[in-house]
Image (cartoon, one colour):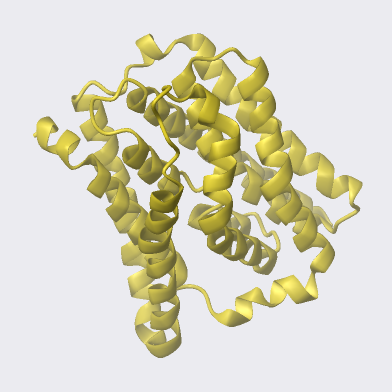
Length: 293
């Protein structure tokens, strides 16, 4: 069974991302992009954090942490990918500006067709094997096929079949969660997830990286004097990354059995666990803040 998972790991990741983006798309309309026009300052701050400061933080960790290559590549993947469906859900639960959250997620998701290959090339090309060539065209193609097309299909369903959109959205989101569980089970069974071999130091690096993104997402909106609900949306958007896309890119870059692939996978999954804990904390904290205002 686990040999089957290893042979089909790429398609597990592709299915998981496609389901997640279908579910997200079935909650979106073109009107959701109005946040760009109505909140230009908050949108600009959020985009600046996503596209500039998050990669800069990753660059500092890659340059200074001294972690193993697989961890550094995992951090680069986390910096190169946008926020995802979970960030929108968490923003809603935290009583943040959901329109701003959706606008930032949607634009960065579309933009990652261009930005993700560039960020990856800048951050990790020197940490890859000597004969490795960054597959920019393939990464862009996979983002288009497994991320943008399901997103557009979901939006069309919401537009043309609004009575069915909620069920399809739940199917996509719950289906993606189910496939993530299969990925974790398959990876553990195949021996790809070994916390002991991964080491406490690398776990600490991932935790500090997540906390650094969280602190940055809190400080910058306050310096920009953004309203509290806008700050909440940006905090969650920056901290909660689209690890679905990271899993696909890892499966694409490193075939089963590759020495780096398991370490990168561990980095992505550990960050995913940490970001869910931080996201839950942000929900509790911000609900109290907004209730007090």
